Image 1 (cartoon, rainbow, N blue to C red):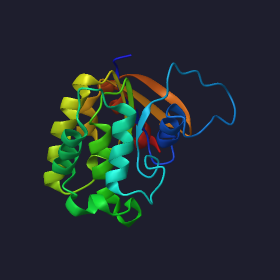
Image 2 (cartoon, rainbow, N blue to C red):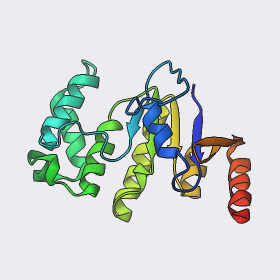
Image 3 (cartoon, helix red, strand yellow):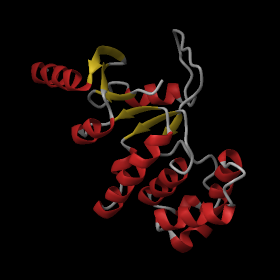
Length: 194
């Protein structure tokens, strides 16, 4: 609890699968998985249950699920509008959104409420440079109110900014667990031998 963990490995190593297991999206086909609670996933295409909902309705669903009584819906929706910059698109079905628009909305909704465990798969690195800068600032503030982060990424700069511990995965197996700097060094050595 409270750790910031990087999942490191090549494509196909099992990073996204592990996040989906930790989030309850997948169930193990063998072995045993014991969790105190499921992670809130920030991975594309798994967040929105019904793509026929408008962005506004998706916002309402998240508000009803997570908001405290102190937060007024009008304030909440205004903050989503300002951050996501989706404007009139919030009234259209999510199925009409580009991947970047879906990511903006998903990121805005997830970072509006604290979560004890967040699992993220390259989610912050979608969009134009201005949006990425804005998202990183919001994400830093969000992490102050969240307990644990698991971040899968190939972006070392992003991992160094947000995580302290690294798990190196290869073909679904953890082959290294330690400090982030050591995990990155281990991964570079393994890749160099491949």
